[in-house]
Amino acid sequence: AHPLIRFLHLEKKIIYRRKVFDGVISSHRVTCLVLGMDPHKARASIQDLLSQVTFDAVLMYGYAGSLDCNMVMGDVMIPEIILSDLPEEVPPLRVPLSQFPLKSVGQEKKTLISTDHVVTDRQERMRLADRYQAHAVDMESFFIAKILTEQKIPFLLIRAISDDIHFALP
View 1 (cartoon, rainbow, N blue to C red):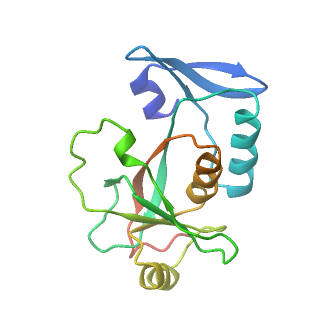
View 2 (view 1 turned 90 degrees about the vertical axis):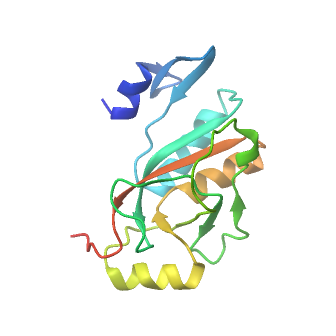
């Protein structure tokens, strides 16, 4: 199982035809849905689940590629602004960090950009960093956050850096 699933002691269950990991943390029910990297599947999965289950809040955890020379593999970021590289997806989304009782996250405001494809080379990473002043890139956060924002469901996004800006993916 995923390290976060093990750490939180969540149990594998099937809820409304979806494999999820479920449990209780500090008297709050927690359900974890593993979505993967495809933004279209992630969007469909979250829409389907939200049509059948009510959530008080959503925690999105996953990986992102660095667009910032100061962010390296293993660093963790909690972005406050989420952008999309697709022209039809505007405006930027702001993560409601004040709704979560976080102790100091020890970082300045970070921006995450979502694309509809894996960003494999350094030149495209540099283009995204320059164009959007983004710190990291992923494929699904914006699309899920947009749905949660429209449904007025508070969410927190945590991304671990899986590769730095100089690393070219195969």
